[in-house]
Image (cartoon, rainbow, N blue to C red; front, side, top):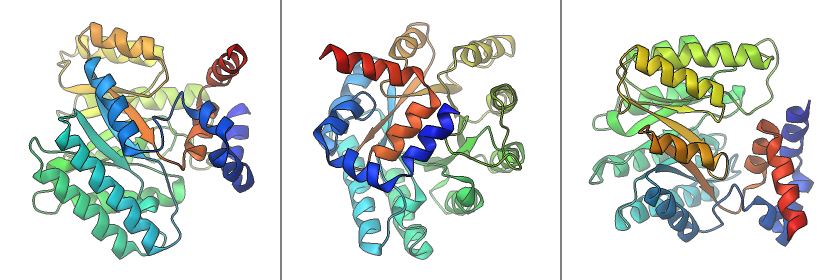
Amino acid sequence: MLRAFFVHLSENRSLRNFAERSAIGQRVSGRFVAGTEIADAVRVTQAVNRSGMSVSIDNLGENVTNPEEARHSAQLYQQILDAIAANGLNANISLKLTHMGLDVDEGLARELVSGLVAKAASMNPPGFVRVDMEGSPYTQRTLDFVHELHGRPGHANSVGTVIQAYLKRSESDVEKLLSEGIRIRLCKGAYKEPASIAFESKEDVDANYIKLMKILMKSGIYHGMATHDESIIREAQAFATREKVSRDAFEFQMLHGIRRDLQQSLVRDGWRMRVYVPFGTEWYPYFMRRLGERPANVFFIARNMLRS
């Protein structure tokens, strides 16, 4: 119920406009969002790297409405890749296709994302572009897009995507991605979806996540297990030990500002960890979905606001 409430708020345009322009909104979001500028993302990434963790940088935004906005979004990502190279950051980038103009001009979106993947592939060391997953209306289009990009000469090692465990179709999607050697970030899913296509109970989502996680860990391809669920993390650790899966064969992934204690504990124990670091002015939908995923975040923010 609480999750659905926050997903609904994430789609409220009036609240979004107010929050993204208000000082208090920006202050509250600071726990989970690095800031509004590339320099903010670089600063946070450097700190995370010093803690022994890698990073995925995301310029927040989705559903642009014209080609100029799409080109501007892509240009920002070009600058992020430049900043990664210039600062020697242990980082890759994560983007949404609707932020690249998928709903405006699919050909333009393909051109822009292909350019970013090509640039990442040419970096030394080579970079990586994670094509993020959005709501179910975009699932097949995103997967088709990634399959095509991955098949282009020189792109295979520099592009991957995301699978959401709460979708009933995900096991089939995983099989197709693995057949082409495509790297996957496995997450539970952050959008509200109908029961006809998505598991509704936490128990069913968790069970599917664990099932898919084990398939990925045994695939021989480097994947990311994105979860803050300690019981699932312990299951992954036990499975890796039991099946003799190297700790270098996959990574855990968590969001900036959430379970820092657990992130640091995993690194101390020799597991690989990547932190998802978002930045940008369009932070409101992302922020509200994070609150819906983990209600404890609401109380954390309220506590800290009262202390100040």
